[in-house]
Image 1 (cartoon, helix red, strand yellow):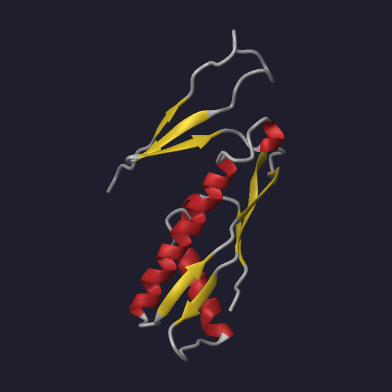
Image 2 (tube, rainbow, N blue to C red):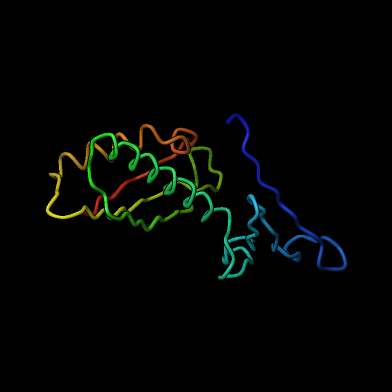
Length: 149
């Protein structure tokens, strides 16, 4: 698994490409799925289309969840469900460039039956999940995990 690919397709929808006057709409092809995408609404995109910042938050949320579930399975934690609301924040980095300068994960984990873990155990597991997450290890800025037990 050295190479994973997606395809992007954008076509000019105006007479010519001009600053601040071109369509941001494009298609993202992942496996057999097609996603309508664009820029964030603040930059001329549509509310109902995914944007790069949301895609980044979705990637880290998904990777963190899968890492957590793999670790929980090894620990024999009977996870029944896992939900997350990931938030991406835009700001400037240390070089003064606009970036996603923070991603916040808000996982909510439900266990089967009477099983429970202490806040300390959950903190440790979330920290391990973050440290082993491939996507988190690819980012240079902050990812914050807010635990909802």
